[in-house]
Image (cartoon, rainbow over all chains, first blue to last red; front, side, top):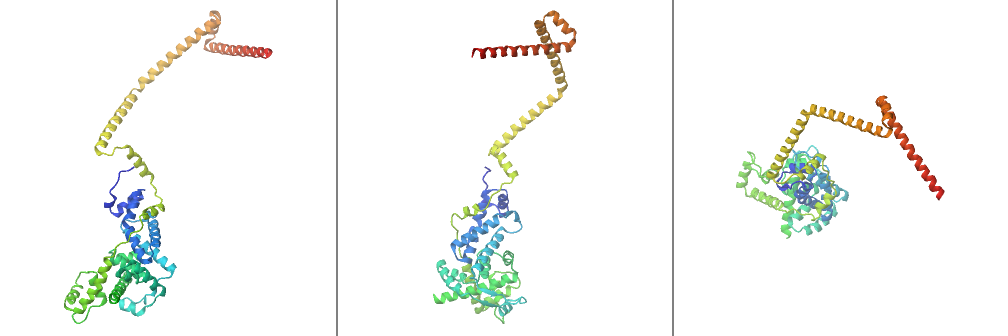
Length: 202
Length: 196
């Protein structure tokens, strides 16, 4: 048995290299580092604990089975969040619970122009589920997050919970930088309104 | 700047704690404008609440379930290195001692092989001499055996025919012996059948 390594203090790239050499402990260290952020992101997207575990499990299996594709100049966490977001969005699309939004004219480049040229269709089923899940989650901010559209949710979570920059979020979610800024701006606006509404009603 | 309130994008810049020349006048305006200051504070409440949300944890079996779907493959060179390391002591000082002993033994063995290689001629000569000695001993023993079996006169006759004559005589002797054994065996078998 090879001597035990202090995996916790190694950077991601080194742990990945050990995993590529067949070290079981290195795989588990990668899971340990990112299971909570990945699970939290997915849970706040799909709002079902059991389903979130399955989707998070799929995320890790996909990434860990393709570690040979990992390049050290990119963050492993970004790759994980990208897959996590994709599996969550795919699930929501299959469930047809997401709100449908058409994000304005392709020629619109400012926030005001996008808002002026877009329209939204809100699915009625989502509000009831939102309310149910938000009650389970318990806090005002969780209720407010649950009320956001999935694409806004993932952007605002990556920005303020995971601390990613706009550029990192754009690369992770394969979105233009302007779109990310728009989504985050709209998410902040909606959260502010939701929290104000909750304060007034509470 | 002082004549208008902050735009939504400008509030976002302040929420993102951006720095730079473009942000300084915005901060200055917020210090002077109560309305914009309130807007920024309201927006910051939501952002602060977001940044304080906890991570949720999956079940304690999550890691095992993931690993069940990840076949771990050890490359051959890593497996060979691990196998070699199993034989080595863990402590560095002990490893140095073992390495020193192994180097000494290897050096001695190498010197021994080199010495043997330099002695090749002498070895070949000794082997040749021993082989010749063995041949002459075997010949003498063979001749004495023949003389004892055939008698001195018959032996001298065979010896006169040279080594070929001796080999033929030995061959005839072996055949006669084998024939006698076969004949006696046949007689014994016939006798035992009659008795039965």
